Length: 275
Image (cartoon, rainbow, N blue to C red):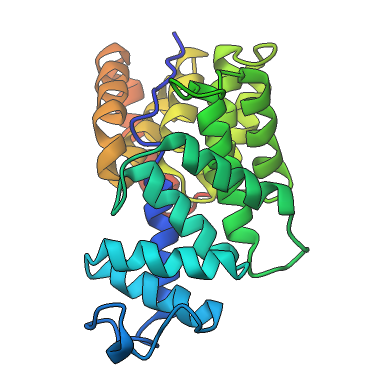
């Protein structure tokens, strides 16, 4: 039986991008991040978009979410894509503003509609906007014009997975292919995308790939992938991965368990090599 998992972890990838933003911005603005959004900070609504973005980023990081929202809004009005994306995330998460998924959807749509130049520094924001829109189309937004549209969700995941190679999109696309959501069910295509995502370090994709091949009769390999994924999983994924791993372990024969244990180091240390 192939299981499809819900959206409990779909917002987690945004925190990964937030970490990347931390590395990019670093301490460029740390001298100002202790101050409110006033004259003492050296930043005002007339400041340049990147200065406003840096201020908003550091304000958000230090928990001053109202200042972050204000700075991001001014920077977004000046056309700064990263600020638009950050502001959309705050609406999606209810961080510093009242949670409003439809408002987030509209901002993500603006980012997606403006497109991105190949190699642009805005690529990460563009692709994550595509994934956010796909998530919304997958679930719909209650009380808004955005209804569930699985075909559109699948297409957006496909664009982010194929054109930009984002592991999270590859994983979500594979789940839709396994479930036959938004189009025909295609296990072979799902395995292809899961394999690509797990080679790019996606623990959830590694686990689901292991579960699929375990069900196909490759007990030792499947259990090896599941066990390796359990050692690499993010907290949001560990529960469902553990459930799959324990189920496979209980169903596997003893000889397959022993082989799986021997294969785990190979899976963990050489993700590009198929055991």
